[in-house]
Length: 267
Image (cartoon, rainbow, N blue to C red; front, side):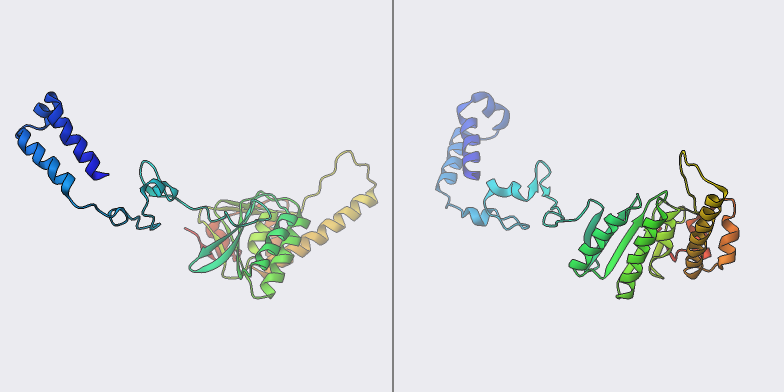
């Protein structure tokens, strides 16, 4: 290929006077013909030796774009998920420091999606699960089921790391706080929130006894979750109760570490 290019260029100098005058100044016709002869008589080069991609080892130039991107010719990125059959779009497996880890993003509180992720991680022998929470909350019962699955895998020796880069409130906060101790991460500017359990019903007709029973159930749920939060933090249940009575308990990432709901900073 190089010979053809050089040959065409030199013949152009010779055949087209304008080109010869513009680009071939200083060379006589005899000198140009001598260069053409030297090119034609030079030994043929092995193309495989002339070109070999250091990345793919491909020696055929017409196949170069199988692993490179034109026009920059940077190495084409490979999709790490092309051979994976994930159960949902929020589940991934990545290699970190030579270890395969499972990643799950929680935005809405879906215990079904979490169950699918945990089953998939178990199938692949994952021993370190990373749950990122970016959620305003949702169903307390859904969150309780997710935490139950987290605690089961923790009992099997699996690290269940939780983290939030931005926002974890209500049921999302409850999931974050129940990560494996020493593996609960927040950004210093993250916003976290816990509050009293809330129920909502539209167009319902209730008697005083109904309301009393509903209040009893809500108080039971509140006591259960607040007790659990006191177990995973530096706060007593009574302190948690006081923080959320008739108000929302907001804290930054830095404050959540001081309270013991998180362990380390991401930033």
